[in-house]
Length: 383
Ligand SMILES: *Cc1c(COP(=O)(O)O)cnc(C)c1O
Image 1 (cartoon, rainbow, N blue to C red):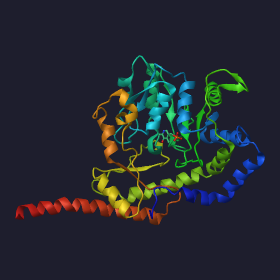
Image 2 (cartoon, rainbow, N blue to C red; image 1 turned 90 degrees about the vertical axis):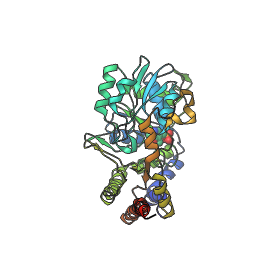
Image 3 (tube, helix red, strand yellow; image 1 turned 90 degrees about the horizontal axis):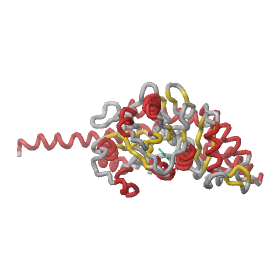
Image 4 (cartoon, helix red, strand yellow; image 1 turned 45 degrees about the horizontal axis):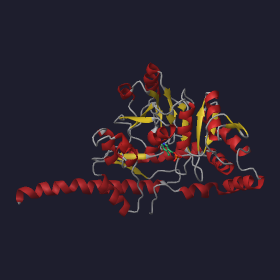
């Protein structure tokens, strides 16, 4: 690939001196779990999000699942989730013992449509889990309106939204706990697996702390059936270095997105991402839509441009959820998105030249396509 989808190595190269020093500091300290780096990262990330507490865990899915458990969600409960999301959102609900109940997205933002929550509520519904998909915050006031009407807990899946803002306020600073993933490809990424939940609720943070460490506060005293999901100090030290660059890197992603939006505005048959006026997205992904996706993707691949599909199979049609027996057509909006979305390269290390090359390749591929049916039409009367 001449233009990779995301250049993770470039992030390391930019910060090599600081990251190497941070890792060496942990190695030299001999303190590898629950050490000073973890404590410092938790404090710094909580402060960054504008939340009172941060509990770091082993992955994003664990942050979601353990927080659901801490919210009292378990077997016999239902949790309302977006039909259009990464399957990890659903799997986290399943890991808590509850059943995911999907609702269709808002067509413009691709995020969960809060107007559809009401119809999905049953006597078993315990919580609703909006996802800030592609980095754009979901419409939280509308989610809360429905949640409050039915006494539901709310958990934000903010895995893609580190640094995003909702009505000017940082994701994670709201009423609901917000779970983050620090998977390497996320806006704030570790060099391995990592995750965290931030919350203003001290009791909730305490319960997640218990759950991540075998249900134990004091060695060999186990209050609840917890698990082992810890963020080690090496990853915490790396995350501290990268957190200091998050705003700058998100701004660079936003600049790439702005260049795409300007350069692709007038392309026939291509729908560009829509951002609500009150949302400041983290631009984790720049997702376009076209009904000619496979041709576009092949043309970009041939031009050496990396693309990805987020996501090609909706969770309700995946083998993992065969037990729920949703037929094809059960969630037509999500199914159509899975056939039309294409994520273009975006990252803090992408140059303007590379963005322009992608724009030119997209324009060329789609104009060649729209030219073809015209040729056929003009040829037909003659033949
Ligand atoms: C990445 C992601 C997760 C899972 O995070 P992991 O760290 O990979 O476990 C959950 N939800 C969404 C929306 C994600 O993008």
